[in-house]
Length: 331
Image 1: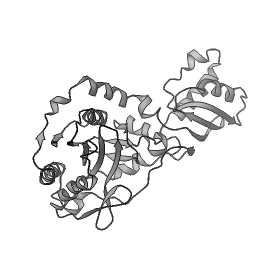
Image 2: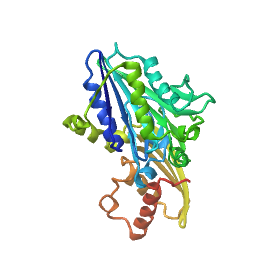
Image 3: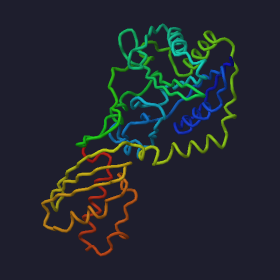
């Protein structure tokens, strides 16, 4: 058996998840890799989750944050630099969930924090507060457990980004389960991300024995770059979302509008528009303009697609597009 430890100080989630993917391809029989990493202002959703049901994804990105979709299941979580992520990668015969969890629990105990593993893949305090969520995946070559440790997360941002829009939505896909959460720093002020990195490394050695620390420069590979390009793409982040239906309504100066959308791969596959406005042609023009377009309206080109509209109609259409593209449209 060969044990390895690696940690990065790159805050980009697409890079960090690409590194995880690359490390999984390097596993040989008997190997165990323990990987530590952090993300800055990020919402990570599970592979089978609907981005717009789980978070205000557009708002997050407009404010400089990241939406990332992982390859494992589970629910949506918020990361900032007060959160520490960990990953165990092991060949199937070396994978030992109980032993891996003990590494985390032993590190927490170094700060006087007693913990136990709950049935929903969470690590919680003795008082029942969640500070770590875990997700899993398996291939014939590599088994993965990855999770989070809330150390000093800005919990005010959880409600800002993880609370989905108040759309009337029927959506397929796995829904997140809400839990009571806490920061480890609230239990012991000496817990910092750097201190926890050291504690985890010590616990890994205590339970697994000697290990080789890998140089992060080994991660500068074409494979990591290729996976980064995939994970950062709109198609992966949003297009992988399951089918859903949603509706919006708004009163404009020129009339009330109701829009019903069916989304497939985050493109508008069906649209119906109803209105009490005097211009009876406009609902049909909206349907014609938006059918087949991306949900975020980024590929709508009014001038090219409806060149014969009147100036007044184009102005109203611009208002509608701006409204539908607003991530806080119903808040």
